[in-house]
Structure formats: structure tokens, C-alpha cells
Image (cartoon, rainbow, N blue to C red; front, side, top):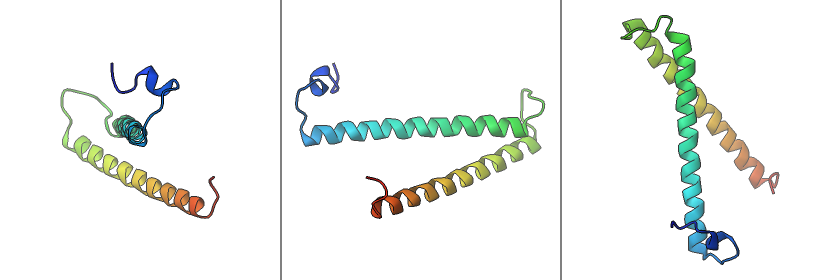
Length: 98
């Protein structure tokens, strides 16, 4: 069995190091899931915007449209992410989140 056996959570005690390891693994899994969701949404939205007649190959204009759409989508996502993180940080430091 893995490190997450029922004895670890069901009343057995975990060391601080084990708790940190579990939390880090959860953070990694959440980050991966978020990245996969971002890629999925970006692909869907940009495909819908740029590809009017799906075929066996993308023409030059479709390739350019997809590249620009994906760049804009990532720029927007990064801006929102930075702003959100800054807001969380401000609220946490001012005691807004407890």
C-alpha cells in the first residue's frame, strides 16, 4: 500500500514531516489539475474562435489565430492570477482571512 494508508489518517499520529509531505503532494496534485483544466479551457475556446472548418491540417491563418489566442488567454490568466494572489496576500496580512 502507499503512504496514505488508513492508519495514517484514521487516528494514527503523523509526524510533522509526514504531514508536510502529504500537504506537498496534495498541492502538487491540485496544481497539475489546475494546469490541465487551464489547457483544456484554452484549447476549447481558441479552437472555437479560430477553426471554422476542421480538416486534416491547419492553414496558416488558423495557426496564427491559435497562437495569438493562446498567448492572449495565458496573458489574461496570468494577470488574473497575480491580482488574485496579491489580494489574498493583502487580506491575509491585514487579518481579513482567519
